[in-house]
Length: 460
Image 1 (tube, one colour):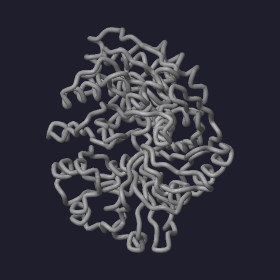
Image 2 (image 1 turned 180 degrees about the horizontal axis):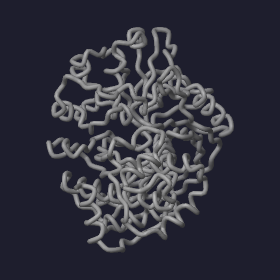
Image 3 (image 1 turned 135 degrees about the vertical axis):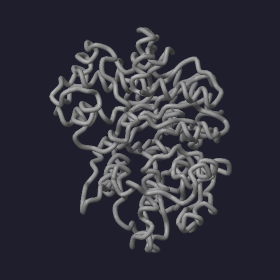
């Protein structure tokens, strides 16, 4: 067995996980966890990137000797470097309002044919259009996405890992490289964008230890961590966001796919993560913060006793994207009073999220022409038994929940393969997970007609 360190950064916390991996064995432990709290300054919401880097360094120190290091994080956000390699200010948070109303001159259907991405207001392409006239942009020599920035500080090596670069809207989904023609047409500088590297490539060395590119978009690593056998599965990487979709060999670039707002993001081994972003557990996380409730188990227990599908909302509505006053916005949309019982609003959120999961799974099958036999839920949402059961009920399919640590496991497995510990393609990596990880199965139940009626209430 060899030891590997997975640096895994999420929207609310970061951690360094250590995995000891053998050909059919993996043992996971947490070396260090640290907070990730955005900072608002001068009217802009920033990531506290130096605090995150300090947490990474402390985590690697606590991890002890390892055979390599891999980094994954959320997508789309970036930092600019000047000619000396210095960071030009903290990266702006994707929930900042600077992209509100920002558009591009390239028609949306053409953008989709090039990059294959769903339209989200915070995609890197729109962030760069908002930043294009700033002094920081004028001084920038390099653009690095968050995992690439941290890898640069560890190794001194510039680069752009493919799975994360594919979320920018500036990578050609067919060539898997930057679209220089699109970048130039948008009035951006192609020289800003470093060479693209693939998962498994060696980036450089930190303190004598190799740093290896993994699926640096956390969802790409999470999909590696789906313990599926065969191809007939849908996945939901469920946390702050729910990323719902299929793993494909080729992108789906039809007009129907574009209008349904499905994305074709890069996956490990050249796969396509064909998915939609669903709001996920963000509304519940924000509501619990406002209620000052930390006991989610008790809250979910009370929510389970609430009447099913009594109140549902469209969680894909952008009104739920920003932080602040989540309870008020949810209550208004659900037709509840602001001082409604937290259990009632929680049940509304989870019923609505299950409906959103079903809608995305159903559309993905139709648009990609691939039927599925089961839905895998990985990530933090796999611990939420009520949500898993409701998703099974809404989809009419078995839900296989776990592993919770799919992202870290996917990160570690790609490193282990690069080190020669495991041979083979994704199927071989997933076989290790099926042998070693706890997976809970939820069979569909409930009244399918009630779910169809609730879906119609949302769609109008």
